[in-house]
Image (cartoon, rainbow, N blue to C red; front, side, top):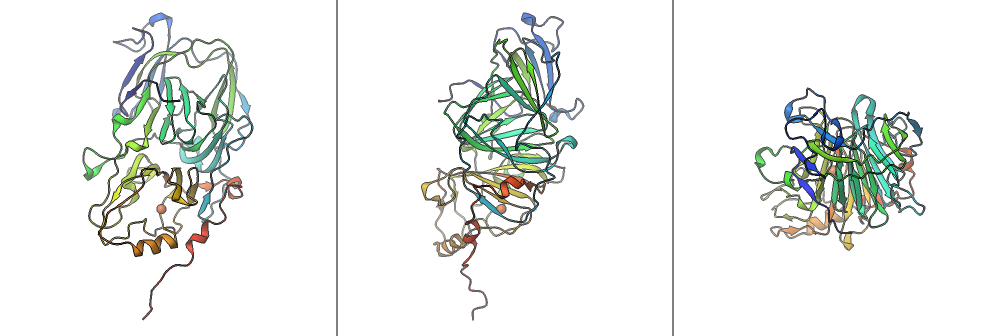
Length: 430
Ligand code: FE2
């Protein structure tokens, strides 16, 4: 299904939208009588008193309040977890084939599997990476992640995501940011869908500083799209599910939570097409550090360590001279999770849906074949990465632990390490 929805644009902007005329108060936020008898609600994603430049909140004008006269029940979260005591802090690099699409009806929430995590959402420190594979719509159900912001990257099959602020169509090659607390429902307009999810327990995703690059380049605020208000007035039972402290909870509401007629503020879901990223790079010599390809980040502190960085590798020129152009061999003071969103048919095992894992400070780099090919390359001729390739990378300063069910997963590629043998060395041959 093509994306025929309307959007507002501008990451971090104060946006406003109303689905019915004159339902958004113009001069104040909490009038005694809201238009049409709507209920007024503020959802704040930051503490009231944080710096104004970091303050995020949204005012919602809705048909019914969300507070209910009934309690919450525990719900089985399966392999979606927020506690990582059982995680494996292994130094092993790993590659995985695409996970299979579900053969039985499985909605987005049921199809989430935690890959790795660190920290604890109850202390607001840490991050997690999840996989999802879904084959069914969420029916009369909405989910909100209280534990952290979610960044969802479909790799196969689009998502139609209904949120309290409106609907977004998210296709492979796009990413969706859903701030914590915002209720949403995932529908599958193209059939089964599979993809990757980054979860952030503290702070919010933000655009990285550009530093000496200047005022332009990398991801542009205007390419981030937020939904327009779009409500429904449905009074049949709905299941409201939240993840709080790593546990799933549910309650039954007597109406749809997607009843927001108007809203205004900065706290909104956004989608972004990764193909809009303006890649920066070296035009003289040496391979730049991958941080130059950061789309979004979340600082962990104020001296450059990040809880999560989201990077993208898409088609671009590499003109560097007398330079080893593939990624240099390295050990990184961050974990790396690489996911292939799309790739040319010649990519071997790096097929769409494949993903790899590199732990904290584990040696890694190009394969021995790639190394030999690079040594044979004619210098001085620019090379062009394929526009068919979209690689997404999650990096985290937190040393995430891999969940045990991923260590033994059927999709784990047992041949991965073989590519790192047979090095063509000439060292000390005299
Ligand atoms: Fe790396």
